[in-house]
Image (cartoon, rainbow, N blue to C red; front, side, top):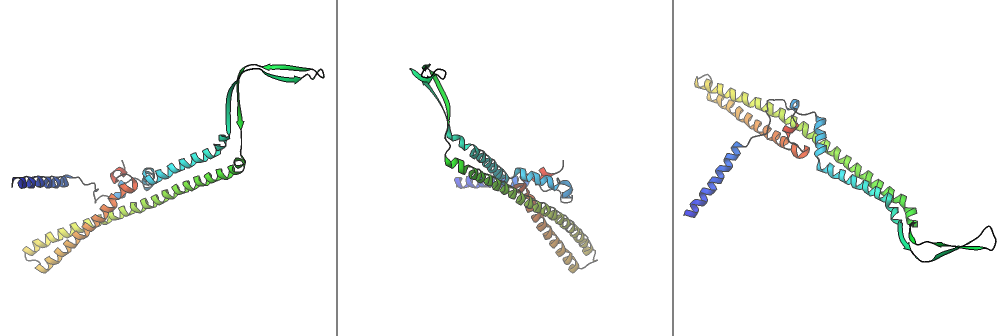
Length: 247
């Protein structure tokens, strides 16, 4: 019994804590009575922010840099056929030369001990014939990567534009539904007083009450649609709506 009581108290404490957190969690939805478009940054600035923060665009940009490096490497790969050498020579290394001044006379010279160094170049036929085609291949790969990044930017801009105007639309609808709801509430308040005073009958009061309930439902639906568009901004643009407000 003691263990069961302790478990119940612990579960109840957690439930209360979650309820309190839910009540105190601040909402980020803006004032529905204010014009949202006048508060937001210009659309072009929002598009620039979205492109800057897009993981897809960043990924494509990295691929472009990789393609550039591959192209530069392909242009210099022929240097693999260049080798340098350094060695040390010792001993008697005589070179016999002929005397051009006196026919038949021979002279000899001795190479002194020391280091020798030099460069040797061996270019295979494949390098001479296939280098241009290989370089062009990497150029085309670079161009296709750039095109893919531009395609990603275009697709992102299209999505942001659609989301931007959807957000403004749902904000305007929410504003209209809010006014309609408040008007219906006021009408019901007046009708209830009139019913008590005998000015209207129960049927008229019921009709106005039904109108108020429908207005409340329409408002909640408009708020849901706006909330969806509102919270979709951050995963698409990379920042939340409050960060897109004018300073």
